[in-house]
Image 1 (cartoon, rainbow, N blue to C red):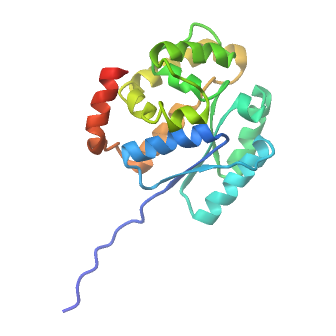
Image 2: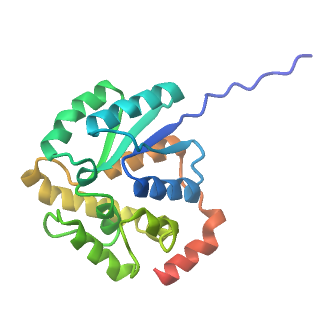
Length: 215
């Protein structure tokens, strides 16, 4: 008698293409910490501008057959204005790519795990100074995430709900003035959770405990 085949839907996949090495390292930490095996993180080094980065991501999405693809960038890193990001949202939609940004850069997202600024902070050095109060050796450089900050995602993980609340509060405060939300990270993280499922940090409980104690 022939065996009955078990029919299963193919597992969905998500692609994150980052503008900087630091972004790639941080979201690779997330991939490892949360056991998101169906999430791929790529640092695209050879883009010319944000429009070109969107195009390259679209090509990777098609060639890799990803269900969802995101471009992760800081406005200061890709030297894009608010107006340019808004204009390129239509282009990204046409290319079946989603945009996840921080204004000015990724450290804003780290900061939102700790507090919501009372007004728009466009000076990255101010954000770094605030983070250094919690993480004394903090640096926005990729080298930090390869050394002292190798567990940064774990240290911030327990405050992810707070980050979402702070992002909403901060956005409601500054979006009317800027014309664009200062961050769109929550939308991307919700998409990742929907595709990858809930995080499984059981293999990192020891490190997580240490990070809570030390962080």
